Image (cartoon, rainbow, N blue to C red; front, side, top):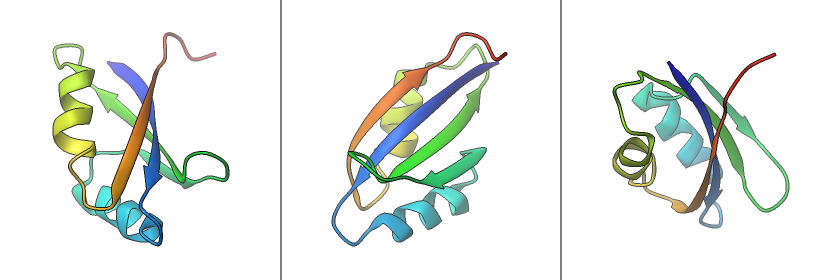
Length: 78
């Protein structure tokens, strides 16, 4: 199982719509609003057989209202 986070920058005024779309898609395990350069931090789990890049490009970045993303791949939880 791969665990990774995606920081999401939303178009102005679209943060809550993007967060709702992520929740409705049931693809993120946790979704947080954040301050700073990005508006949302979402946590994902993906089977080892799946490609993170394809997942982010095909399932996350296509949601309406997303302007930019930054993916953080994790190695080990302590």
